[in-house]
Length: 189
Image 1: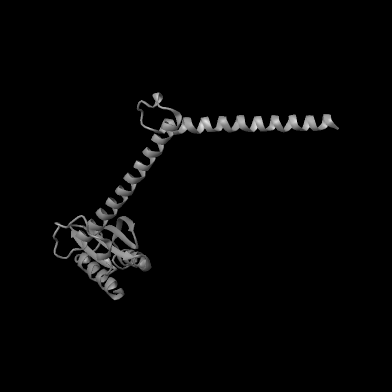
Image 2: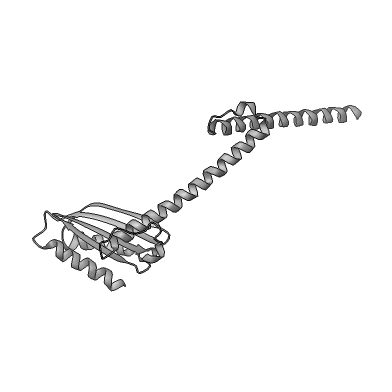
């Protein structure tokens, strides 16, 4: 009976040692991976806890930089969209324009450059259908060819850009398309 207990205790002890060894190996692998991601400095002379503190500080600094870049991107997108929609054509806008200025949505601006029509549409997330209606009017009613369509989402505003060719359309198609699209957008406002 005593021999069984002794064997069981040895077995548990061996299991604990194996688990502890595997844990140490895993921790070393994680440390090596973290260490490889950090910028190379004179870390070798630092103790392990100091190296971990340095890694934590570096990660916090990166997080702050990412948040600053996201905020800057949000302001730049809002500013550029507002400048495109600004009826006075002034491009001297401050970079601190907030998206809340664009709450009177949807809004549309159309520019005709030769045989190309540039359409800038800003909608809220609740007016998702507007983009599909705009493309339907362009392609089905006028026969124009859409060459590019893209969008960006900032907060609850969706910024669409659409470029279409009017080469195969009859004379005056650009002004008819513009009027139809503005009428469509104004019915929603």
